[in-house]
Image (cartoon, rainbow, N blue to C red):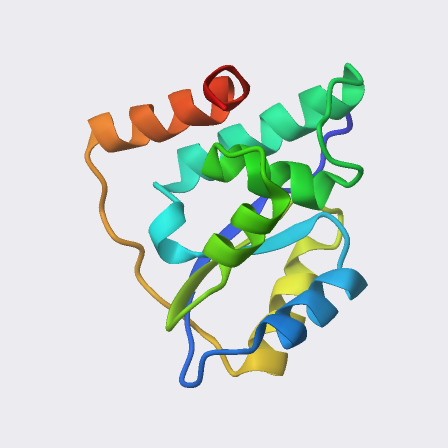
Length: 143
């Protein structure tokens, strides 16, 4: 697996961006995803979903055709793409996640395009984080 940069940032919006605007941004920024902040149980959860996504593609056991969608499915612990896309829509807060070599540039572009600002992430208990990581690892068994 390639050693790529990981960037995970909690952000807040003055105005919630549309799904079309978010999808347009993501199409121009590979290996990047934006998720509703309520779906991300800390940095370790997001990192684990990235690692599982990379491993799935390396071992050719991915569900989705793209790493970006595979990541979202694994992060949320679901197999249905439409369900993942709908639930991931940001509201007033989101988590920007990138595992590309240009992660910092993508983040800067994101902040500029959407007028987003860095925000403090909600604190999660260790049990919440571990449950989310377990769901990320075993979602395909439960669905």
